[in-house]
Image (cartoon, rainbow, N blue to C red; front, side):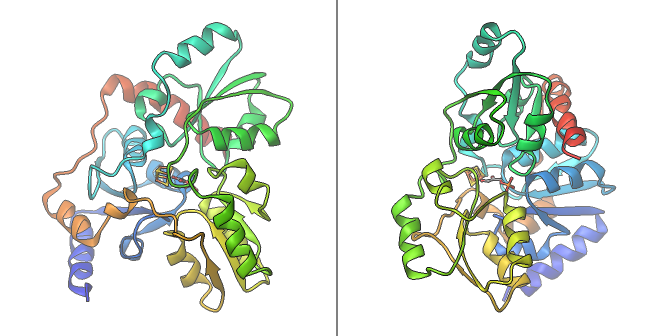
Amino acid sequence: MKTHLKEQIFTLKKEKNAVILAHYYAPAEAQEVADYVGDSFYLAKIAKKSAADMIVFCGVSFMGESAKILNPDKKVLMPDLRADCAMAHMVAKGKIEEMRKKYEDLAVVCYINSTAELKCQSDVCVTSSNAIKIVKALPNKNIFFIPDRNLGRYVASQVPEKNIIINDGCCPIHATITKEQLLEQKEQHPNAPILIHPECEPELLELSDFIGSTAELIDYVASSPLDEFIICTEDGVDYQLVTDNPCKKFFYPNPRPCCADMKLNTLENILSVLEKEDREVFVDETVAKKAWKPLDRMLELGR
Ligand code: 13P
Ligand code: SF4
């Protein structure tokens, strides 16, 4: 039905030497036209090494900002600039300075789901697929983990040798999935393992069989001999799961977790931004220079 839109996108993309990146939570139609689809870490790495003149980022604002910070000379566009991540703002003003005063050797570890302003006050960024590895590798004993309390608590449980102080932010999509919703699926599909994103509450993680980033959940399914799975994350991953595993079945908490901001990345918006180049991501130069450091350190330590 939308073939004509896709054809126009492909033609313009080629004409303008643009590359389209899409997160696994973007709508299926965005993932279909993207050159690269992945989790936050993979997309940050792709954005850094891209040779295109223009990057169209089908994600939310912190992803577009990170791509711009890593590529200050490139034009970074987003199909809809309103696509934001509520959690990215959830650190109270003055909190980082307060913690730095309290602990001399503090490392501020910033989940990539954060604003550029928060990144530039941090020592290193992490994503859900490299947070444990990076926190373990830091020389500091005291860690202030921002903004996500759930990823922070999960990392703390895996790195007990560190003192991890946790900021009280959360993802409004993952943190509102309830234990009852998950148990309902388990009751209906007792043989299906529960695969979960670490942004969910700890009592849900306790019930799960595997915890990982979106890419790690997708990889788990691909290498598993089982044929049904309970997927406890945003339902955009379904496109990749079904494409890669047409004979396997996937069940989600009811109602299916859905990030409305991610769903703003429609074909119409992608075509329009490629035509007009009007939804460009700008990051203040001083902020960008400071925020580049923790992002680059993540790419180094996360390798
Ligand atoms: P990933 O690190 O799996 O890409 O997760 C990003 C995200 O926004 C989760 O809500
Ligand atoms: Fe942010 Fe949650 Fe949406 Fe991920 S799912 S982009 S953490 S609001």
